Length: 116
Image (cartoon, rainbow, N blue to C red; front, side, top):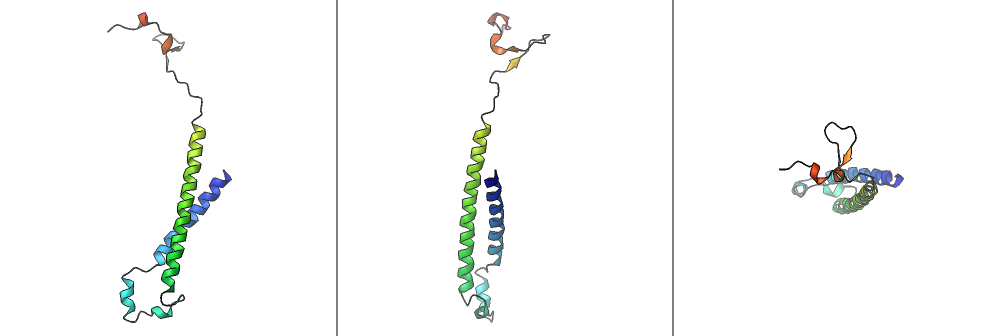
């Protein structure tokens, strides 16, 4: 139970991180504006370093997100397998009209069934 909550917390933080890193990245159309004085050489990571850093970090976050997704799916499968062992009666209980005692469908003689 504690592992599920921990993986779920990491999963949510990774999802937020992926969204943030995708939104930070510039599209391919933004490079056209750089030739008209966009100042790409004055970035923190250098002229082309931010693209590589953001791309690699996003790829790492997405890979970790995928791994936590598989982990949560495995945990959900285990929980479903554990909950399928509930004692549910297999026979449907039928009570005849006017009787307060439930009778199983297998206890009714064939002669008591209505003829068609």
